[in-house]
Length: 246
Image 1 (cartoon, rainbow, N blue to C red):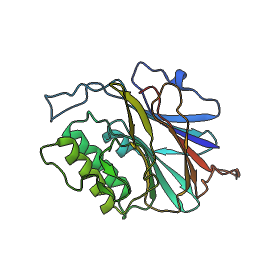
Image 2 (image 1 turned 60 degrees about the horizontal axis):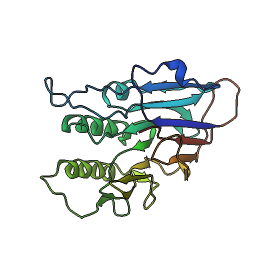
Image 3 (image 1 turned 120 degrees about the vertical axis):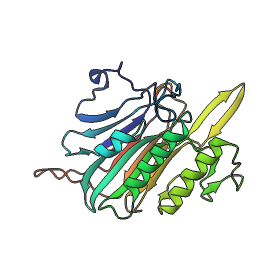
């Protein structure tokens, strides 16, 4: 069985019935197009993309991580029992249009669910939009941050936090998004799979784009089994992350 995790286009105009997949349930987090910028009186106009959804087999017992859901922009997380205890799986979309305030909020939420004092392990999957990060070195590509460049400063904050949390990641030199910009092919590694325990992930495969997306899809083979309630013993063995229509 597979779990699709889909950062894409979700807002209150998309009905639950339009998202139905037979045999699956889901949790969704819609994009708020007028999300707060700084404190109360400033708003950033965001792009048409955004929002996340996690599908799971309807035979599984899954809990929404409510504290993460309430705070993290465009992202959500679930908790489920596994062969190594409880695990948290988060679908993350970090919009490049997020204000400094909301970048800090998202980073704080990620730190909370990846904290080593937690009683569960964590798997983060999604579009982190960190094009200037070298995943080979775990630092910015130019080796230093231009403090006058807000985007670089924010990307440095994220990769520094991932290092401090002891997170491991799967993708290093792969390309997860291709698009034409003024006639020039732009290739980037924007999507990533991060985890607190290397037992969580067995392999990550890049699959073809879905729909009109300029992102590839990711299929993650779990190195653990997920526990179903009652006497059902069929294990979910892989997770799929896709990007649609952005």
